[in-house]
Length: 434
Ligand code: GAL
Image (tube, rainbow, N blue to C red; front, side, top):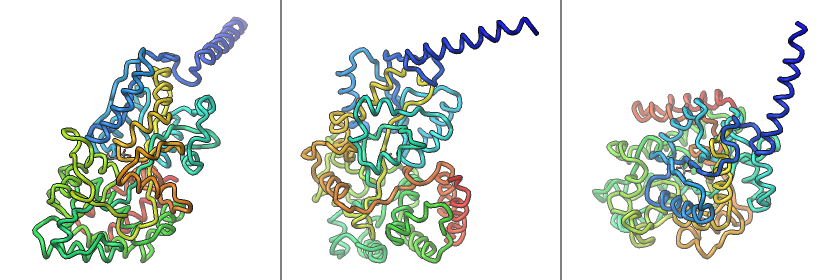
């Protein structure tokens, strides 16, 4: 027994020395292999399509100019709203093979990573770069847990946008974009009866989830929609049942064969004159207006128009792409340099006009945001704007609830049973773990 004392003392000394070394290298909390290595950075996202990939490329070019010694690896994995990427990311995090930085939505989605101990707090990074004052307070709150800040928001997207083809509306005798869910259903019927076009284009299953959040907001209104994401929310209420019945009705005017395409195929159908309406986030704007051959090179007001999705005018259903510092990031120095780029005014003003989003920072150059983006910029910054969080894009549903809702929607697409959908959504809320 006596022989153990020195060993214990040595162990304690070694541990103290190691802690000191980690503190000096700024490595605190990771596995010690990466240190402050800035020779590389692997950035993980799902931005592979026109618009989004162009935005990322613009920020990457600026990053490379400012960090000539750091090799940038773009680890983007295709699949709208990150359906594929998030599965790959989960297994990498599980196996402790994190990228140097990954894209995670501000809000409940980020909270899952925090609670699982997968990402590091960034408070000293925020202090060094004077970032706290650069972001709106309500956004800082969505990335803070137990007093610590965990990510770097690069943009604000709007989920509740109705994109439409003005020529098809005219042919169908529709005076303008429908302002309520009831008017929307009437307009969809008019397109079906009077033209040979698709009334509402839809893509992969997640676009049906995206549509669901828009119909819930449009039917219930902002306060009741927001209340759905609070503990003890009443998903069995008749008003939710009515919204789901409307959702079922709207789904009758979509195309089931579109299920194999992602959001791009569904959005493109509108600007190509094949579909009258599409409800999609404003990343569609980056895709529509981006320069050919990458983007579609289409013109606002001629090839397409936009409005708030039916029943949601005056409310910004928002989401925010943010970048993180995973625990054990192999090139922590590279990751911090990337976070600096993503948080900078220059980086955000290069990225967002191409991405189809507005900057998360408050001091962006407003003149760069034209057409739809000028509208988005003004709406977001309007005093007293009403906010709703996009559940599909990470703001107010935990990953578990997100998956459970997707499963419920998938079953509904097959059985079309509104009662079962409502019961499944109620149980998803009860078991959300929030
Ligand atoms: C969202 C993401 C956007 C865009 C969109 C379509 O979840 O926040 O940046 O990528 O998916 O893939």
